[in-house]
Length: 154
Image (cartoon, rainbow, N blue to C red; front, side, top):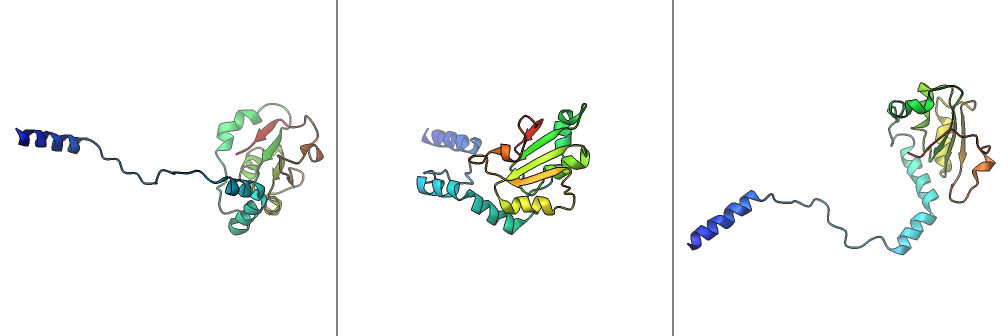
C-alpha cells in the first residue's frame, strides 16, 4: 500500500510541469536616492548613451507608414512633433515615405539632436531639430501654437 502511494506521488511529480525561473524576483525596488539621481541626471546619461552608440543602437522604424499612414493621407501638408527624437529613427523613414511632412524634432540630449542634424537626409526645410526637456522647457519658443497635426513619442 505504501508503495502505491509512493508511485502515485512520483506520477504526479512527473506530470506537473516544472517551472524554471530565469530572472530572480526582485525583492526590493530602486532606492529613492538612485531614482532621484537618474531622474536629475537623465540628460547626462542619454548624452553618454548617444556618445557610445551614435545612431547604431535603435533601428529605423520603417513600419510606421504601415501603422500610421492614414494620419498622413488627405489634403495639406502635415506637421509632426517627434518628442524624444533620438538619432532620428522615426523621422527619416517617415520623411522618405511622406516628403511633404514637416517635422519638429526635440530631445533633451544635445548629442542626439546633433545626430539628427548630421544625418545625410536632414534638410532644414523639412526638419527643425532642437534640444528640449518637456518637463521644464516651453515648446512655444520653438513651435507656433496650434501648428502641430501629429505628435509621436516612440
